[in-house]
Length: 101
Image 1 (cartoon, rainbow, N blue to C red):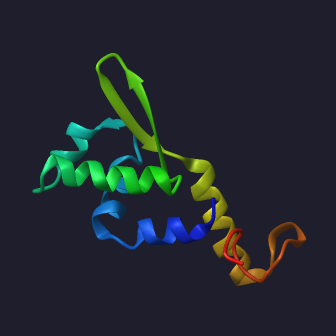
Image 2 (spheres, one colour):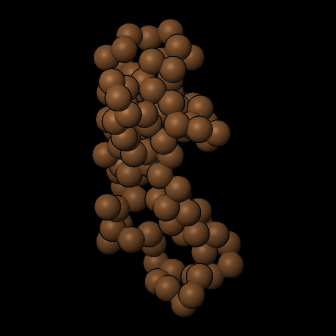
């Protein structure tokens, strides 16, 4: 998965806030939605965009679906950003993030 979807997902302030909410622990859509004044379908759309970008994952536990951060994608993104400051980590391609060519 390329960074194009990741940056698109991060461009929305609501989705960035959802990521902040998931920082400490996994939450259900209802728990996430309780922090916003918007319809459940809108929250579901934001969760879908974040999931498709690989920023979150979901798991079913009983009758609930829990959403949690996908730290490997965030680590890859922060590694690429760090490479812009001081050269490519591990001698990688300094030209841009994977999937953006």
